[in-house]
Image 1 (tube, one colour):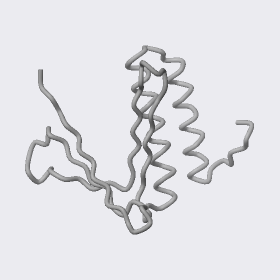
Image 2: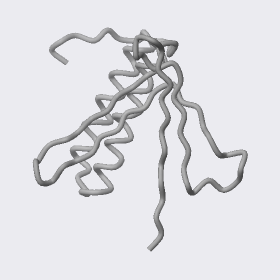
Image 3: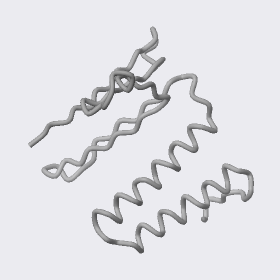
Image 4: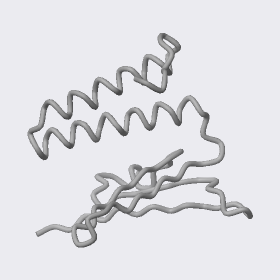
Length: 117
């Protein structure tokens, strides 16, 4: 069995707000791929014993709002892909992807969102 380690490093300002987020993987192929910079991260861990999710969401204070919105829509879409792969539930994955389409249309200014959508 092979282990893979992901390492995240968060530099905080004096108010404990993230200034920089960096990460690296032990599976990096070349030294130049070592430490990577990020503007945001979102980690979810399922605790089967407690039947609940631990969530960590961090973003740097200089991340633009439009990028933040796209980051979350992209994350939701990736969750749909993982869900379909893990459960073979295409209907549920399709609904989530449809929501992503609606959110992207809103972000792009094509359609307004209402609370009843």
